[in-house]
Image (cartoon, rainbow, N blue to C red; front, side, top):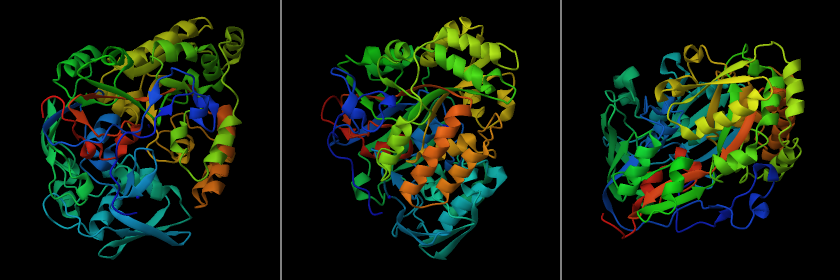
Length: 553
């Protein structure tokens, strides 16, 4: 849950600093920032020197797979984005640029032609061709692959190599989202012959990977580390890594992570918890950066029988939740209130950004806490079950504090919130495995929108056929508007259809929007260059990383 046209330009020095503001401010966030607020930056200063080794942390725990087709969570994406190149690149500002596809065209509304980059080789030296692209996309139709993006192929009729470096995709009806999904694991290209040989073990410690990215997978010691070494033959000279060896660790305890960052045992990490950020903010060992983010935190029911599936219960919880207090006390000021579960970063660089902004501004404002009104909604709700068992990741202090806030507020209106902490593997797996949601009524979603289009996330949650539509939500008008948005390549027309759908599901879709957090990145003082924005999740962020001349390298 959470989602490119020539050689991509490297990120340069510090980007324009953007001021923080509330998600509910609409069009231009920077225009409404207050003096002294936390400041956002899209990139860190450009790196100059080479570095022998960097140790990086994955605070959400060890990945269960690195297979691009199955990557749908923080830890695996943070690693795989540096190993397996997608057809289109996601840039630090959430705009796009060419990746393994140099250009594309639509000869008719139901056909997409991808022209592939020449001179690209896999880590084993074999050239990348159209056959590899076809194999990488087609395998995601096969149920045994368990692709997290299988729904993207629902409208595809054929994917064929129409020359050695050209792929043609045909659709039943026009499809605007398919192209945009090529920025994430769905669009990553693996070597066809290696895929066939590895079978179901592809992407595991045993099966390995064979991709074209700036780093090569060199080792995976389960429970301890994943290592990658730089690809000296990488096709993009501007992004040939300055780091010789990249080692990923899996420290999930906030205190242990803070100590490791302060001591230099770990050089950097995205997703720094707010409790750690307070200690790292004044560190002389490195720098804490805040970046724009496409992340979203919300509470969602896990089944149609959940009390939270009744929109009146969801509205009641929303009414008693003091979001301003949450932002200040739990997120250390580094988050925004939000009216909905889709952050503005995903549309702010769109040609139709004004349409999206107008649609967001038209949504009802988030009310302040209103216990009396919330009580009435709970009394009206049916069924009368008043206990909610809510899942969260074990050791995630930020989520625990958020749910503790909600627990205390829910008690005021006759609802009992039981917090259940799940281990990382179970927490990650529950999103795609119904068996792991048994006994749960709701979950705290630390979600993110992977692709630069809000339609993708709305479609994923509200489509009756989506594996993430856990409550069997159905609204024919919402589905109609979303289908119309997907079926047009006119961005303003798509935005108009999306905002019409949003206005409808904002009234009946059972979800409790909480906040949209900002990205928190910590870098040891000897390092710089990596993007500071959430775009790292689907971009080769470590290829930008290098030395600053401070400390040892």
